[in-house]
Image 1 (cartoon, rainbow, N blue to C red):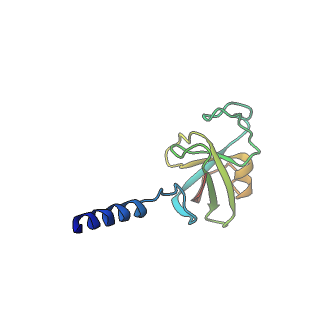
Image 2: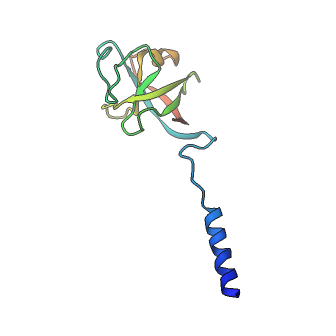
Image 3: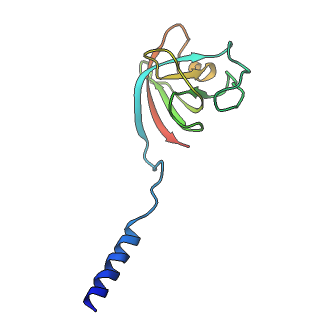
Length: 126
């Protein structure tokens, strides 16, 4: 009887203490600080790595590893302007740059394309 009670208690605790974890919680999580550049006219209308057609005016970006569809908040550290973007492409393929923004997103944070800017990326979800 005592063993049965202990066994049932163990099973009960095990079953109810395990719950599926969310991939993204309600908290935001800062994931990267680095440099951003943008891409636009030369790629407008071409297919992205995700298969969708690149529109340089949409709020999208390219990242090397984040899943397609991931939503990011990108903030220009020098002027504190932010933009929400969705990952739909792969890149950048330039040393020292962690994200390529669409031209539309870049303009929202004051990135004019002449140089890379230091940014903070916060993961918002999917």
